[in-house]
Length: 120
Picture 1 (tube, rainbow, N blue to C red):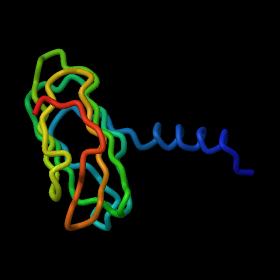
Picture 2: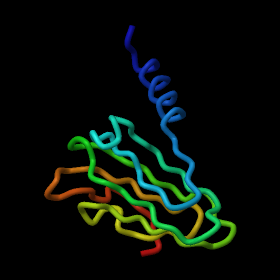
Picture 3: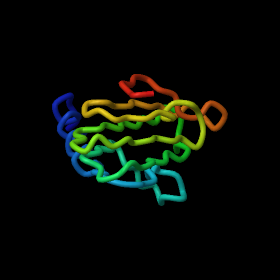
């Protein structure tokens, strides 16, 4: 039986299953055929050992969201996020607590930033 409570439990379980903990160069799986429908969301970055780039390919459907968070950064490294299409996600993060919440619009507009706290 579907209810608001069940929806929240299901959403939390999905979050726990799909969270990707990243510490270095990585290409986000966005659910397209290239990634066999696999979606990495959210992306949590903790204590990278070197500066690196996180690549964000095109999304799979309009309205798709992606959360990227820098949870800790004890060595003060810079994470550059680069989207294949769109200006959302083309930013850097260097301080713990910074984040990007992105939405895929379409192949013309690409990723847009819904909300973000970034270095540049």
